[in-house]
Length: 245
Image (cartoon, rainbow, N blue to C red):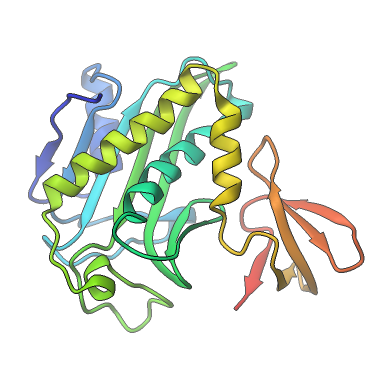
């Protein structure tokens, strides 16, 4: 069990940035969680900005030291972190899945986003800062966001943020320990089982080419494996492909 108490801040620029500063000046224990009620510069994947109503949602980062995982296998960390969140949310919200690489969906709507930052030196990962934004109690979202949803919008309940964070942290550490103890196949298998639209024929676009295909998994580097309508399998890194709703 992860007994560490989260470090809560009313406001900060970004919990990932705050965790980075903390590591530079100290050596926080693995599993340390930094949470905030509001982020002035919250970040998403590929430099996007994460928006959140102050005091309504979970915004946090976890510090890990995955010494047994080589840089080539770093997507495993993302898998375990995603699964920890997804498994907690599915106890509250129906139709939870993981949209590659690591967004959490409720049905066809985004309920959480994840940003994993690994510090690599040679053939080892020095540390990982895994950040997440989870839409919990927010009811109104900016019009330009494509498909946001929150736990409250889906269930009508108001959630206690510290209690929910405690549950999610425990779940993340449980999945992460599978990696640490060498049971990586459990993580990979469950990630595949929970993938959004796994095995369903969909329309895709990649570098101006439009085609039909279905997800058959991810490879050891975290690239998406897609089988096209003619049976050809291709692999795509993040931002090399997008599905067409």
